[in-house]
Length: 124
Image 1 (spheres, rainbow, N blue to C red):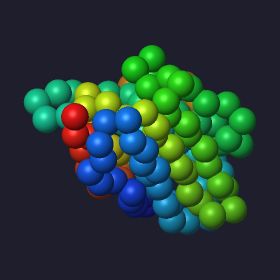
Image 2 (image 1 turned 60 degrees about the horizontal axis):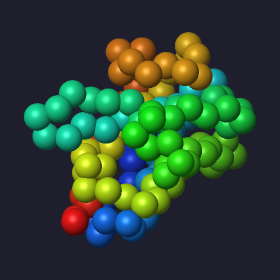
Image 3 (image 1 turned 180 degrees about the vertical axis):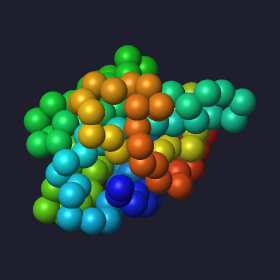
């Protein structure tokens, strides 16, 4: 089990950038594949991006490809989601999640551990 704490959310104008961080507790962080999901009001939680344990491989939803970049620093037990060219439709609560099965897990039910979420609001 790993505890996850997200930070970095906020209010930004369309076209702006934010960087979300997810800090993990414990000494087994490198065992986990990490992912980001988001959930807008009245909508289901949707996959945003995922990263392999080494950080070499990443996978993105089509809606964010080319605008978002996911990375991780295993020495700091932290993953980062750099979000550029933000759009109003990116507005949601963003969740960090961890699982030990595979890099390309896109179903939230495949993830075993979740953070509390951080709000991202993009104004037009």
